[in-house]
Image 1 (tube, one colour):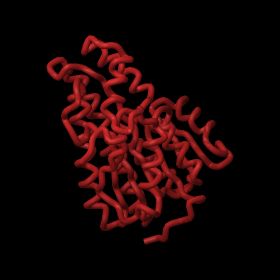
Image 2: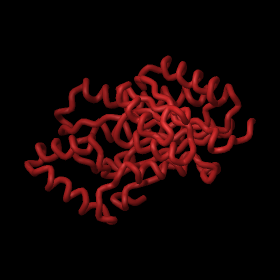
Image 3: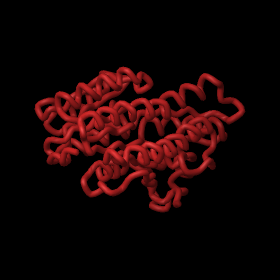
Image 4: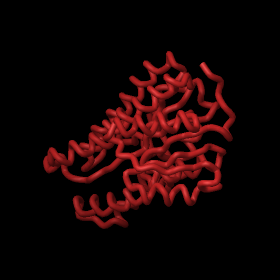
Length: 264
């Protein structure tokens, strides 16, 4: 196996990094010396993220269009990045949500949620792992799960819960098999994160409960012992730890980053 390169020469791919948590992860890793390949199904959003990173394109940051449900495209991307720049870490962050009562979730919504949130992690995880094995890289893979990966007591998100429970189990399975190649695999489990996705969820839950977005938001803060909404940066700092040398002997873990909203 090859030895770990210095942080200034490390390259990480982040999926779903055109906005929200993914953009925060890309920003934090760039600030800590990583070269970041920002990917998103929204190519313009990915390019905007790169433009805002420390040093921008001059530091070697890149953007690329990636549909995480396209395993062949993920493989091409992983191989290209590894052969040109080296690939030391991959963050599977892309995800979606939609709120609806369990009995009203359509088969199409269920399938789309699992395709992006779970199948996307599976296919991109395969691409990253195969490339790291081929190049003999002792790399790190981090998957974005959710507080909803550890409890089903989450209203109106049954398809999302199913997908994120799957991510947690997949993370453990990946970690167990890839340990032989010294590739660590972990996931982060955020809580109530203030993002554009959360803004939509506030509207949806308010509609479904007869409340208001402000009332729903207050209930989320009240459910969080640290008494505030989580920021994308809170998640990003946890990811930065999991891809760092400090976490080289941590694998198969689901790190709760939720201000105490769910404790296990």
